[in-house]
Length: 139
Image (cartoon, rainbow, N blue to C red; front, side, top):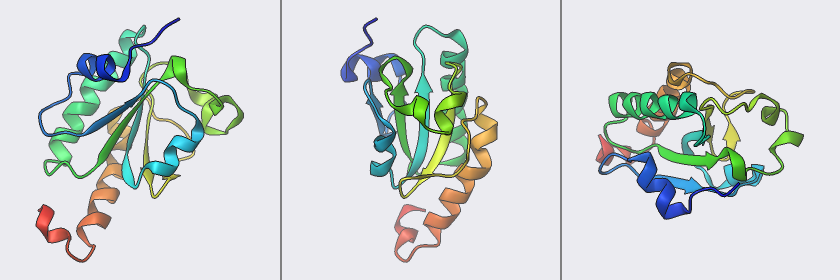
């Protein structure tokens, strides 16, 4: 199966203006290392549940992160390799799983399939960021 290129994937995701999103059609668990503060979403282009979850997650982020300081990284389920050997990889089913990441580390021990389930982690990320010196420029 072929998956969309980075450019085509971003176009299909219909990213809101001003929101930075990285689409990774191919990824390994090491991709988390490059994330300082953000939300990782697993898209399955063939799953209506995944696409519906993406829309709900976009709405949630617009509601809680109006300054757009959280990174959003989208992984294509069909291009993910090596996740099956990790504890978190066992729960990927293609329904729009997501997890918050801070400084390369997952803030949960499993993927969540509902955007509301990551709300608390995302709010903690935002609160921690706003407490940093100089972060008032973002509020």
